[in-house]
Image 1 (cartoon, rainbow, N blue to C red):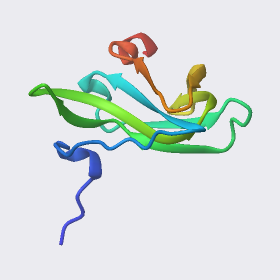
Image 2: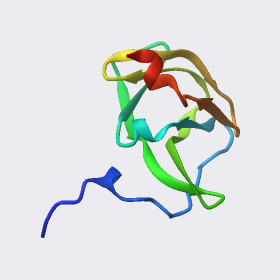
Image 3: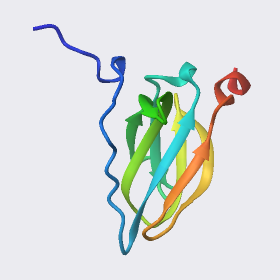
Image 4: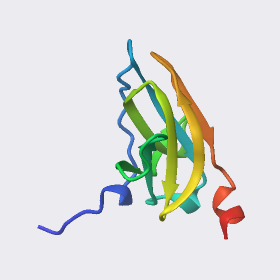
Length: 111
C-alpha cells in the first residue's frame, strides 16, 4: 500500500478545537503557496522545545482555505517558526479563546 503524504489531500473534515480554562487555540491562515509547509510552535520562554503542524488545505464557505491549527495550547506567549526562522514572536493565546494570524502573502515577503 503506497504511503500518502498527509498534506497532499484536501481535508474536508471539521476541525474540533479543545478550548477551556487554562488553554486556547491558534489558527494561522496562509496562501496556497504554504500548503504542506510545517509550522513549529514553542513557548516564548523556551525556543528549543517545539511542536509542529502542517498547513493543510481545508474548505471554508465552499472555497479552499490553507491553515495550520494548534489547539489545546496552554494560555501564554508563543513563537512560531518556519524552516528554522522565527516568523512571529510574542503571539498570545488566551484561556478559552481562538487566536488567529493572517500570513497570506507572507511567503512572498520572506523570499
